Image (spheres, rainbow, N blue to C red):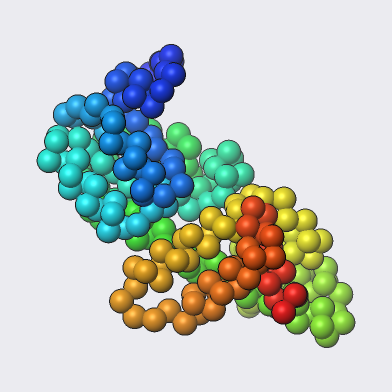
Length: 241
């Protein structure tokens, strides 16, 4: 693979004009479409979309771009922005397997691991599944800390005991102290995860009862003014019941 070179790009159109491989990282699939609408894409160009978007929309976009000879990989990221800076994230990629293998090394420049999970849209699907479990772990931790507080336990000791018990999850290492001190300096914003939970519920053909409850908690926390705070602020929705 050729060494990277600098491109003097003023607009998104300049990026598409000068780059054979373009990475996208946008709030949702609708904005991805808005950006691509005016882009002059060319056959053989590669789009790597790290947006956490609607799986069906990303699959449809992949098919549309393939018809133009443009390769599309939906490459969702498991991990926070802080973890990304440390190259401590997993990238889950949907799209053509041969294109994935061709650009695996490029993805590894910012990840500790990458995995191909299926055709276009599969990266987004896998991100929703992993985020569902991650988010519920976070909500369960918040509820456990609130219960410990109600039982007048020492919260720092409680967190230590939970880490040493079968209840342990890695979320305790990243969010436990934040919940105890209520320092919600954002690593990943609460409203962003609420968007993901809504996508999960929309994507499923059957009810997801725990995710539905989680949605209600996140919406309450957002209404309390914690939308731009770290997603560990979900604990406020329980504390302020």
